Image (cartoon, rainbow, N blue to C red):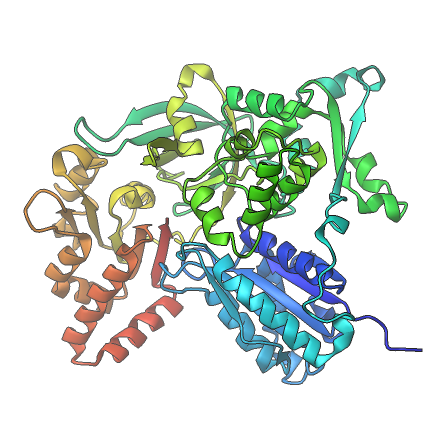
Length: 621
C-alpha cells in the first residue's frame, strides 16, 4: 500500500481580513494542484498540536506599530514558553507569509518574529518568508503570487505526494467553483415566532454571529450602544479639511474605559445603495434567512443551524456585507466569470482573475476604489447566487477611533475627534463610510450606535509620570483626554509635567481645540512652563518654509532631553505616513547630541525606552 496523500495546514492571524483572504487563496491554489488544504485561524488551533503537523503555512498580518492581530496573541504567548526547547518542532516544516505596510517602522514585524521563533524551536523552513507590502501598487499579491509558485515547487521536491500530478498540473477551475462554503436557508414567515420577526436589540449579534466574515469570536455582540449628543465642526471656513468633535452618552449600560483607549463603531450604510444592491442581485429583502457553513450538511451536525435565529435578508446585508465602500478581492472576479452570460464580460473577468491581469485589475478595482455594487453594475450579465455573495462580499467592519475624552473629566460620556474623509479619484468623489455617516447624524435623531471598546497602543499613564506628547492633526485626540484627566487629578494631588507638541496646516483654520490647549498652557495649567511642561505648535503652511512637529522638538531639544532624563514617557499619535519616523529621527539627533554617541547607539537607547513602555506610538493611515 502506497504512502497516503499529504495535506497542507494553513494558519492565519488577521485583524482586518487581508490575511484571511491570502490564507484562503493559498488553500485554493493548493487544492487546484491536487493537495488537500485545511485553513484555520490561530485562535481556533491548539498550538500544542504543532509538533504533530508535517507542513504548515502561516499567514500573519502586522497592525499599527508592529502589533499582532488579536487572534494571534494567545498563540504567540504559547510559543514563547521557555520549557518548549529547541527541538520541540524538529519534525515540522513551515513557511511564513506576512502582510504589512512598509510605511510603518516595524514593517511585517509579526511575520519576522514568528519565523525566527519557529526556527528557534527546531522547525525547518520550506522557503524563505514572504513579505507582502500594502504600499506596492498591486498590494500584497505582488509578492504572494511568485512566493506561492516557489512554495509549490519546493513542497513537491520535498515529497511528490503533496502534488500527485506535479505542482504545475491544475484541476480545471470549474470543478472547484460550483460549491460555495456557505448555504442559505429560507424560512416561511408563517412558521416563525412573531418575536423573532421583530428587529430586537440582539439583531446585530444575530446577524454578525452567522456572517462568514467574522474575524474574532468576541466581535459579534457590541459592548454597548452610544447615542450622539453633540456634532461640532472644529475646522474653520477656508480649511481643506472637515474635522468634527462628537460627544456621545451611553445607552442603558455603560462601559469603563481609560484615557488612551480605542472605540470601534459599526457604521450604517446608505439605505438607497443597499436597496440598489438587493435589486441588482434580484433578492427578496423581506425574506427571512439563516446562514450556515455547508460542511454541517456532510458531517450530520446541524448545531450551527439550530443555534442561529432567522433574520431578514435586508437586515443581514446592512449589518454584515460592505457593498458600498469596500473593493472586492480577486477571487470575487473569478467567481463572477462563471456566472457571466455575456462573452465579452466573461473574458474580461477571466483576465482580471489571472496572474497576467493582476495589474489591470488593480487599476480598475483597488486604484479606483470600486465598491462591490459598482463592480456588479459594470458587469450586468453576471447573476451570482446569494450564497457566493455572502461568502465573497467583504464584511462590514467596525471603524476604530482614539477616544478624546477622560472618564474622570467627562463621566458617562465618550468624545471622538474625527476627520470626515473625502477625496476625488478619476473625477469620482469618494467618501469615508463611517466618518461621513457620523457627520450626517444629529442628536435629535437619537440613533443607537453599536460600539466595542479595546486597548489601543497608548497605555493610560500614572499621574506621577512626566509626559512628552506629540499629536499633530487629529493625533491630538487621545491627548485631549490625557490633559483633561490630569487637570482633575491636579485638584487633589501633585501631577508630573507635560510637554505637548501640536501641528496643523494653518493656525486660523485648522487649530483643533485651540481654546482648550491655550487655557492649559497659561495660568499654571497642565501645559504651563511654571508646571515644568509646555505647549509648542507647528503651523506648516503659515510661512514659506514648512514647519512640522519634529522641527519644534529639535528647537526644544534641551527641555526634551532633561524631561527624558527625569523618566518621562513619549507618546506619539497621528498619521502613519512620515510623521512617526520623522519624530523618531529628531529624537535620535537629540540623544546623539546630548550623549555624544553614534546613530546606532541613539537608536538602541530609544528602543530600550520603547521596551520599558516609555515610547508609545499610535498611528493610522
